[in-house]
Length: 389
Image 1 (tube, rainbow, N blue to C red):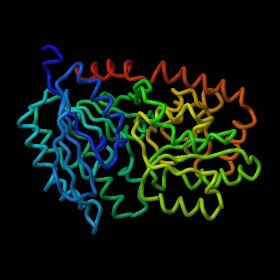
Image 2: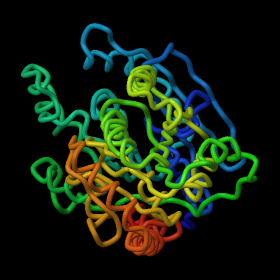
Image 3: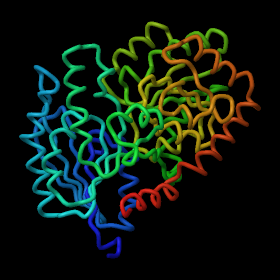
Image 4: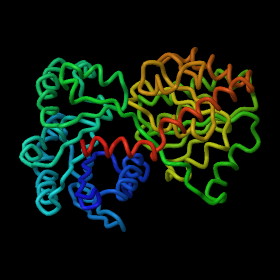
């Protein structure tokens, strides 16, 4: 059978939606590339939200977007809402589309993976899972009762898959006792080339930094584990020594008010710019306006923004022991700091400021590495081989 005649169903809890146009943009880019080879449909779910279903028709594929509530009593009880609102719609999609291949991009094994086991298990399609996050690993919670639930349900959630793909090698090793080695595979992640974007689309960002000599960029959802508060603390220490520097944070999320208050309390409103989340094409074209990308995220399975910044030719600072460690090799093609360590982050940023030529060499090495190993045109053939093997 010709690949284009085959049907591919992508199931994901990360996909751009009107409320957040950058969420899971790398999944979107994979979908767009895969439409050249398969008939594609996307089933996307999101919580917490008021229950509703939206169907968005694109020229090459349809997106079925299901929103559902989160339990306010006990987070695993959110599975009830997935059963009630998402699962019936998923069954409709399976029955009407009848895919040859099912590929799930997962953030949580509860509620999504656990709930869909029986339904997907009965379908004859080849089943692929890509693991993107570690939120429901037992060691990620300090609550004994929740640890027990995760420990008992995790093996079931990983039971039905023909292949389980991991975006970093450490996570693959962590899951060895749950996913047999013949089913598990490291695949990484990938980006598309920087999309074209009119200069006026980024003029509002360029305007904020034009008067500064050294400009730092950070991008991500404004959640605690991204480490933006750590970055702001580090910047405050550096700003006392280097007056002509700026920090720009692009992102939206529940930490915005707290971070804004932190900036105000430090008196850095003129030096730190908080910009709401922007479409991916704008962010991709912003990198070239900056001198350094730093994101001290201490819970990151991969971190697509790091390789976007590297592809743009920026020196990058990531965090040791996180998903980007190994893609970024400290002192070779970027820099790594210790997790939640303000002093080490200050030291790394200071080194870049004081050693521009050496930092440029790191950035060039990073750009070459990403363009050779993490671009979509090299990634998709690997994925197709997995689908068809």
